Image (cartoon, rainbow, N blue to C red; front, side):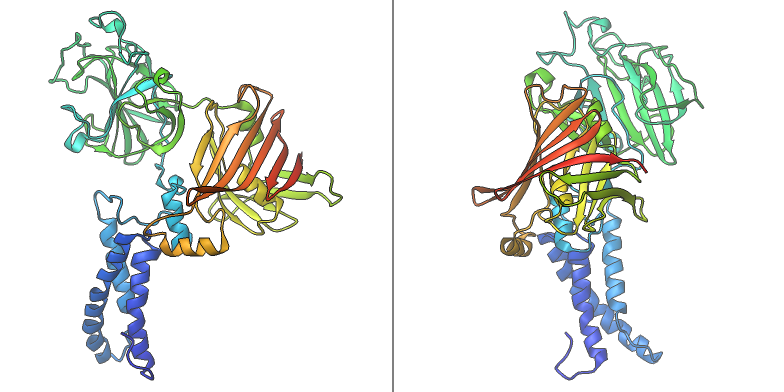
Length: 507
């Protein structure tokens, strides 16, 4: 495309348009995949048409084409992707640019870019305790279809998966009936209906389809609707300010509701029954079974929609962890290695221009970026020497739930976290097609009473890479927390052991 050797710089620049356009739309702004490579090939004839069409026009004005065809092709292809109503999973725009196609791909594959997919306003579950998702997005029933398909129904189930006690012929026999319904986020009450009678079991009221309802405004163009509430149970009025977790009403069976349940949806307008929006819940604990007693595996889920028949509940914070791993800007930590005469290192929390927090080692200059909310501490990137103490801490506390979890937590890691010089390069080449290196982070409570001590905790973590049926352990660590503060870190890596002690510093 660039022309024969010795051709003019203009010919070279024109040929470079093909290369740069294909790279941009196939691997930089789009997560690399087989589909993105096909998208890149499609950009070549478009670039050729632009080169042929713009050349004579620009020549008349005495202007060179340079990179104009590349710019137009890239903008056109990216704009087409932005216009998709349902983006799908084949051509995925990069949500957080890491300036490396491989890093973008690994972050996408391990859902390490979840915060970028979070909603503008974090929404919590609108109830207390464990409830079953009886209908999720686009359910198989007569509701949750078409423009109203992105909605959720919840009810409470017992050990047998039933939603009621006794014969189930009375409203009061249903576990969720009259249970409090909470505000999913801070907001303003927009609409209230509370004079619709609850239906007898098995009957529905299609004339007043939504029944008793509360609509909240959380942000411009972002509203939540809670429906089928018990008659005359609403505690708020239009114009009231509400806080997340505030009781709004009680669960009922009004409107199109054959039995008590809670209908929850997010919408762009305040009118009751507006078309729904796909919008994730910020965090919840979920089990795959219809009720918690049928499954012992509970998972902390972030920025997602509860699936059908999952039992979900709000996480309960672990006070010792929440206090010890609260790392606000300006927080300073003195770190000392046991048995070593070297002076203590000093770590401090800073924020960058994007208000992203990072932990910086003043001794080595290493930096570990992290994100934190009330339920999770997660490290997102590391820059610096991988022999530093900060890197050991970065691996040991890579993803720590700040809530009570009786089961070990495991998560796939981006390959950028742990690298093998030769195999890593080969995996980068093959990554858009298949992955043979699979890094994994595991975290569990150490001791006989995991996670139940209020004064302290011991977290045991393990980072390993699976390859060809074998597993190579990169690091094992134990992070000790006592009296609401980081106390120590024991690290085992490549047959060597490192013991660190921590002491918070006051500024």
